[in-house]
Image (cartoon, rainbow, N blue to C red; front, side, top):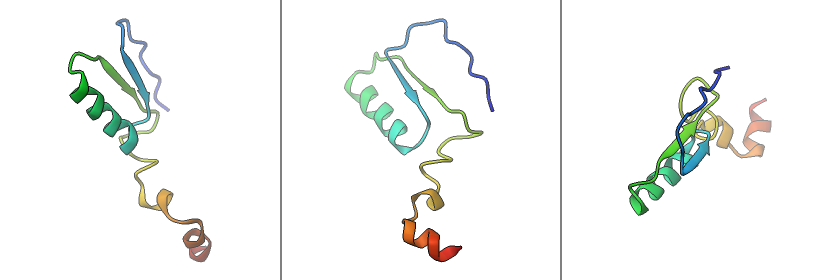
Amino acid sequence: MTTPIASMSHSDVVLVGTGIMSATLAVFLKELDPSLKIEIYEVLGSEAQESSNAWNNAAPAMRRSAS
């Protein structure tokens, strides 16, 4: 697990997780207000590992049939 480095500056928006929803929200917010300072934190090793992984989005019935 990665230890986050505390930011010493002010952030207007802090997003937790780098999945598709946080990435999309960050883009929308920047388009609405380019002056926003947005920070995004992720605990996993790289971006979009949890919510964007196809297996995590599989329907519960598909998971049961695979086991």
